[in-house]
Amino acid sequence: VRNMTLLKNAVLYGKNASGKSNIFKALSFVQNFIINTMKMDPTSSIGINNFKLNEDSINSPSTFELSFIINNIIYKYGFTILNNEVQEEWLHQNIQRFTTLFHRKSSDGSSLEIGPSFKEGKQVPKNQIRKNGLFLPLVAVFNGEIATDIMKWIKSITIISGDRIKENHTI
Image (cartoon, rainbow, N blue to C red; front, side):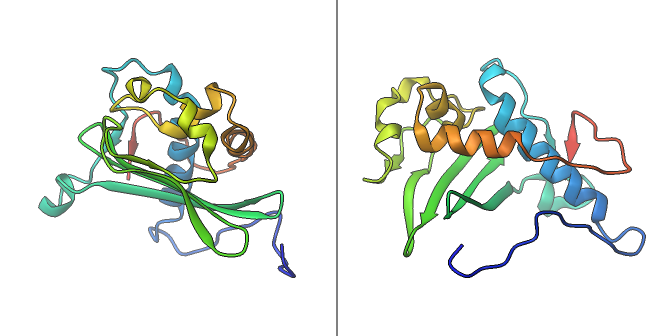
């Protein structure tokens, strides 16, 4: 992308107990949550267990963000989870500069800003947005082109780790 050289594969090295496995667990959680969010029951738990040995982290949100390139466009997609609700979700793209495609600032979607370059997001009824679900996969269900391309990319991620990844993730 624009004279950038990127690795197609990466390896993570480090000493014991330095957090390598947690990076893989986090990436696995992000991938599974995005792919399976539409299958979740509206009352289902998202599956984030905050670190309980630190009072600050028990009630702190967990934030995840991916940066990636599809068709020579740089995207940043992320979300924040607290108390089994998606508190915030965003998607930005960089063609010549970063612009916001959408920014969800409330769990129920009542505060959802959709940028002019993301018309496909305007096709989704706001009452379809669940507190424990993501907006991006919902747009893909409504055949949004950008959202569908991003979902395909996320599904293509292969995570190889020596640790077993549990369904309930502690980050």
